[in-house]
Amino acid sequence: GPLLERRLMDVRLGELPLWVTTRDFSPQALLGGAQRAWNSYYNKYINVKKGGPAGVSMLLAGYCLLSYAWNYQHIKHYRWRKYH
Image 1 (cartoon, rainbow, N blue to C red):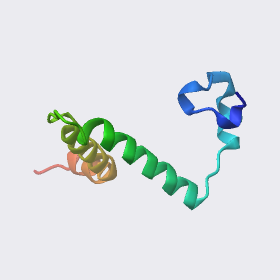
Image 2 (cartoon, one colour):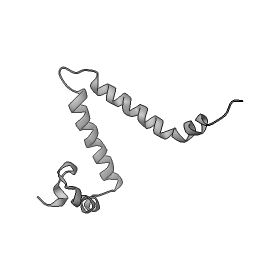
Image 3 (cartoon, rainbow, N blue to C red):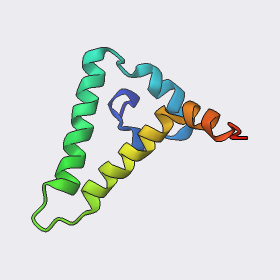
């Protein structure tokens, strides 16, 4: 199909820059993309008949990585501080 209608996983690497330029980056479009991603994640890992700890574990791991990334500059300076 046309490049505009393809999903990210269906785009070839050489077509990626052109595909990115066709995307809509308005706040409404970004919010809609975040909602679609959350619904997809929720239906695949959380809202299942026989669920396990995988879905919640991924959320917790993602939170830990995001928190570490946000605090990295502070952690980096703290690591090199001398205590003598």
